[in-house]
Length: 300
Ligand SMILES: [Zn+2]
Image: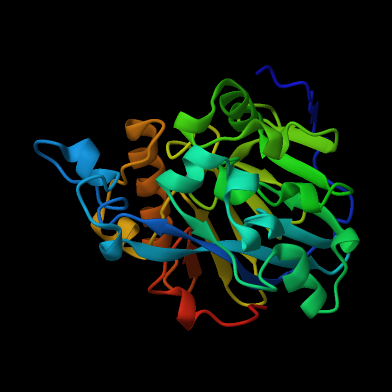
């Protein structure tokens, strides 16, 4: 079905710039998704696709991985989220938010109190206090919870918006997650606001003070963005699904779900170069079950 929402181009930088600003970041787990064992490390050989999506593996051998949202607090621009995780309705079953086919293909779950609004309220923050939501991409595990922030300005790569509007279940999108009359804004990593920074070819400076850089890292989806955040004395790299897990960066893993493999490998190489050049950077990958328990509650 055609998408009715027409996003406006974002005017960057967004208000709230403060030279030299650093941010505070809280990782929030807003659900989990059940992945087959080879989803993050694509098998080769006969039946590789079927093996990759888990059709030849009993679900008892699949693993739950975290679906993260990040709260970012900027000293003058206010509070923003990176992604929205699963909608709270997933606590009563995933079909309502994700649809029957998606809920069957990759089961999802969310414990009581784990939706992004509930996580925020537990920190003393009302969802209405979130001014901006940066979407790494519009896959259903990132956009399912978007309707919980109808007052926020959503920032998404223009190429991602187009891919999501043209795509559907097979590409991991569900139009009702984003085809809504909120303040959707697109950014253009090929436009005049974009430039090379931190070793990444195409970046955008969200507030114009270097505290929140959007990095164009397409491949997982056509308009995927990673986010580089300035902490007091180091940086925090949120790879999003450009690298599901840290081992993807270290061992060049190719996952089963990919929009464009050459673009994915190029983005992965840029992430690897950055991590190699910046050994003190904190790196948080998209769905890393092994690293999640070791994350600090707050990075500043
Ligand atoms: Zn994704």
